[in-house]
Image (tube, rainbow, N blue to C red; front, side, top):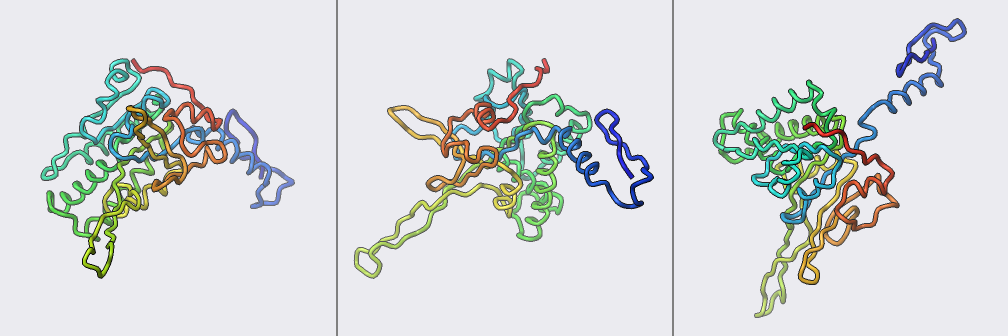
Length: 294
C-alpha cells in the first residue's frame, strides 16, 4: 500500500511491492507532516493571561492579532477598548455580562451562540478570540449547573455540582482551543494569605496575615485543570514607579507569581513589555492581522 499526492492531500493506492497491511513509514510520515502543515491551529497562539484587577489584562488585547473577537463575561470590562470597537478592530459581544444567579441563562446562551459561529466558520475570519474572563465564565457555568439541578441561586454542593462544572469547563475550553485563530483566555488572581503568630507564648503574642502567593480565581478544580490546558500562561503586573504605573507581562515564575512559556523559552525575559505581537515576533511566530470585517 502507498500514497500519492493530490493537491494538499495524500491518496492511498495499492503497490505490488508493499506487503498487505504494512505501512510505508516514509509515506505515512509525509502524510502526517502535510496534515500538520495545513492545520491552521499549528500556527495559532494560545495563552491563559491571569492577573489582579487593574493590571492590564483586557487592555492587552489592543496588541493582539486583529480582528479580535471578545466574549465578555466581566461587566464593563471592554470599556478600555471602545475606540478599537468603534473602528472595527475589536468585536465585543457583551451580552454575557448580564448574568442573574437566580435565573441563569448566560452560559446556555454562550454555548448556543459559540456553536452557531463555529458551524458558520465565523472564526476563520478572526485573528484572535478572547474569553474575558474565565473567572466569571466559570461562575456562569456553575450557575447553569445549579439551575439544571433545581438549585439556582444556592451554594454549590461539592461533588454534586463541582464535578459537572469541571466536565463542562474542560469540554468547552477544548472547543475554544480548537479554533482556527489565536486564543486568549483571561482570568483573575486572588492573593493567598496565611496567618502567622508572632511572639508565640509571650504577652506580646499577636497574629498577622502574610501574603504567600496568588491563586487563579475559579470555582472547583478549574484553578488546577484550566491552566494545564494551555501551552502559555502569562501574568500581567502593574508596578508604581516615579508617580506613574509601569505595566508588564510575567512569562516565568517570578516573586510570588506563577507563569510559564514554551514559545518563548530561552527567548523571553521574565518580565516583558505588554505587547502580544512584539512577543510573537520575538518568538518567531506569525503576527499578521486578518482583513477587517467592516
